Image 1: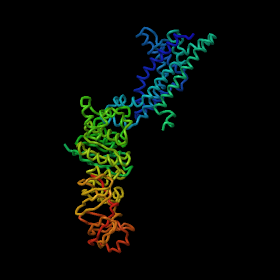
Image 2: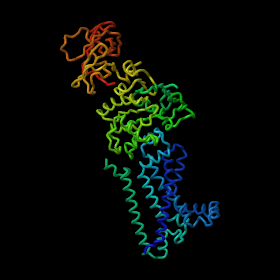
Image 3: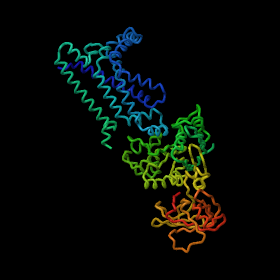
Image 4: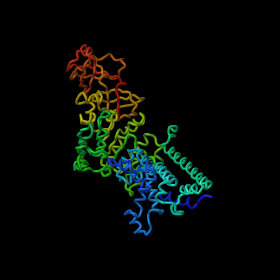
Length: 228
Length: 356
C-alpha cells in the first residue's frame, strides 16, 4: 500500500508552493527579463543559487534562519504560538526558496523572447508597464508560464534534502513522499519503498513529457526545426 | 502654439536637427540610406530611446531635454507603424485596433479606423495570424490611427511587402494620411515611396541632415554630390495624366506632352511625378525626321554644362528643367555650350511615373 497521508501532504505542499511561486515569480521574472539595471545580474545569481547549492546547505541556513534562535523564528513563534521550523509553514518557505529558479528561469526566458516591438507598440499606444505585461507579455509567453508551473510542482514533489533539514519527519505534518521512501528503506521495507518509487518515477516521466510537449507547441523545442 | 515638432537628436552616430511641420495631413519624409540614423530619430521622437544631450519638442511641449526631463512614450500620444506591423498575435483584429483606446470610445473608433484604412471587411473577429502582409499592415495602421495621435510615425511602412502589394498600399497610404489629417513622419529609403507620400523631404546621410525642402525639389535638385548620390540622379517633374491605355500613359509636363510606360494603374487627371534618369536623356541638335523608336522629343535650351569625369552633365530648360548625361565626345561633336538649342530625346520606357 502507498502511504496516502504522505502523498496528500506532498501534493498539498507542491500546489501551494506553485501558486505562491507563480504570484511572486511572474513579476520577478518580468523585472529580470526587461530591466536595464546592472545589479540585476546579482539577483539572477541569487535566484539560481538553489540549482547549484547542495540541498543540505540551503536547508542548514534555512533551519538557522527559521529556528527559535533567530529573530525571525522568535517573532513567528511569539506571533502565532507555534515554531516555524519543523512545521508545514516552514516547509513551505523552504520549498518556495528551493524551487525559485524552476519557476523564474523558464518564465524569464519566455518573457525575454517576446518580440520587443510588441512591447514598444503597447507603450506607444499609451499603456502602462503593468498592462503591457498582463495583456501582451503573459499571453505571448503562456507556454513558458505553464512550463514554470509544471516544473515547480514536480520539483517540489521530488525535493528531499531541504525537507529533511527544515521539516524533519513528522507524519502528516512534514513527512512528504520522498521522505517516506527514505523511511521505508531505513526500516528495510523494500517493497513499500519500491511501490512509492515506481509511482514517483511514473509521475516524473509524465511531467517531463508534458513540459517538452508544451515547449514544442510554443516553438521553443527542437520540433520547430521540422515545423518550418 | 507652434505647429511644429523640433528634434535635435544626438545618439550614437546621429547628430541631426529636424524641424517638422505638424499641419494637419502634412507628410514629412525622412530619406536616407540604411544606417543613416533615420530609425534612431524616429525612436527618439516616439520616446523609445532618449537623446544624449539633444532635445525633442512637440508643439512647444518639451518631451526630452537630453538630461532629466523625459516624457515617457505612453504619454506622448504618437502613433507608430513598424516595418512589419508588430500586431499582437493572440488578439483579434478588432482587439488590436482597440488596444490604445479608452473603454468608452472603443467600438465606434475601431470600426471608423478600420474603414479609414480600407480594411472594414476585416472587422469580423478574425485572428491576426491569418492576415496577408498588406492586410496586417493596414490593421497596424488602423491601430496607430485609432487613438488620434498628435503625430504619426511610420518606419519603412511598405518595405516588408511584396512589390504589387507595396504599390497598392503606397497609393492608398497617401490618401489615408491626407484624409485623416494627422501629420506624419515617414522613414524610407525608397525614392518612389518618398515622392509618392511626402510633402517635405529631409535627406539624412551619416546621421546628419543634408537637405530639407519640398520633396520634389529635394529629389530634383540635390544640393551637393553626396545628396545626389543618395537620392539618385533622376529628374523628378510634376505632371498630369492626359490619357492612359494599355499601360501607356500620355502625360503633360509643363508645355510638353510625353508618353511613358506604366503599371501604376493611372487614370486621366491623376497627378504624377515624372522621373527620368539623366543617362536616359540623349541630345540632338536638329529635330530627327521622325520614325525613331523614342516617343519623346522635347525642344530645349542648354543652360549649363558640368564635366563629370568621362561624362558631361547638361542642364536643359524645356519650360521645365531637365538634365542629360552624355559622354564627352558626344558633347564635343554636338558642340554643346550654354544657350544652344537642342532636342532632348527620351524613350517611353525610360520615363518612370509615380502617382502623387
